[in-house]
Amino acid sequence: MALVLTRGDLRPLIEDLTELEGAFQRVEEAVLQQEEGEAGYATYLPARLQEHQHLALYTTVRPSEATVRIWPDVGSTEHPPESHVMLLLDVSHGQLRAILAGDDLNVLRTSVPVGVGVKHLAPEATVYGLLGTGEQAGGHIRAVAHAVSTLERVRVYSRTPANREQFAATWSEKLGIEVEAVDSAEAAVREADVVSNAATGGNLLVAEWVKPGALITSVGGPPIPGLDVRIVIPARQRPSPIWPRFHQPGQEAPIVRHDATLAQVIRGEAPIREQEDQIVLYTVAAPWSWDGPIMQWAYDWAVAHDAGTTIDFSASERTELATS
Image (tube, rainbow, N blue to C red; front, side, top):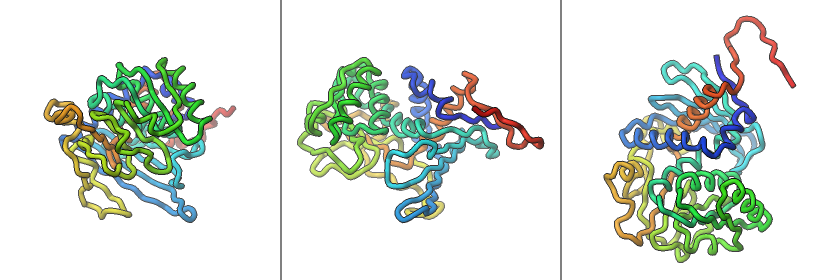
């Protein structure tokens, strides 16, 4: 039987900031497993809906779980409700274990790996510069605040003043630390120990703004012109892709140029930086095996808290479900 988890079922997990530690542990385990070559496989298949819009199907298979994720790839980082569906399957024979609403989990799927990197690459950071105030920015500020106990203040910028003011007020209350809305990207970046660009519409960073010795996190996007950085990626292996737009089946996933892996830093096999003032870029640009750890974390929490609805899809008799 499969467990169905709606957005409402998962809300207690999402809103309880203390529960994030479980997600951190799962992602950190995945980082170390990928360093050992246990990255599994990933498949991306786009089906055209309209011009420049696709229905995206993304699957992953790792030694511990298999997943399917379906969402409309419409050129936006924010989607309407009920547009992101996640499936968790038993890796041994593919049996469906859970159907999960991905509205909130997808944000954590991206931001928790960033938080894990910050935890190990900037453990004593006090100032966080955040560019953007959308869904991804909300995930980033939550993950970074959890990762760094020394964090004292956040400076956030977005192009819309009302959005950054509201974002700052909301997260100041949630986190209990100072979140300040600033009127320029430069004001957010200068003097920040950690910088994240979670804004849509391109890169807002300028090399001259970045503090010596800072950590920059990236989930993709263009490089920062003129910025000399030490590049750290999660692990030495990524999932082998079946990626019609870029790769052929059986090819290994290309690994971007890097100077160290997060797994090496965690194990004490590589330094965070080679000089004290060296700027570090931690990039988690896809594909990596984050889907399984995040879905499994949510599934285990739901089982422990008796959340969701169990449905037997193989039942031979009709089952009436209560509606409200």
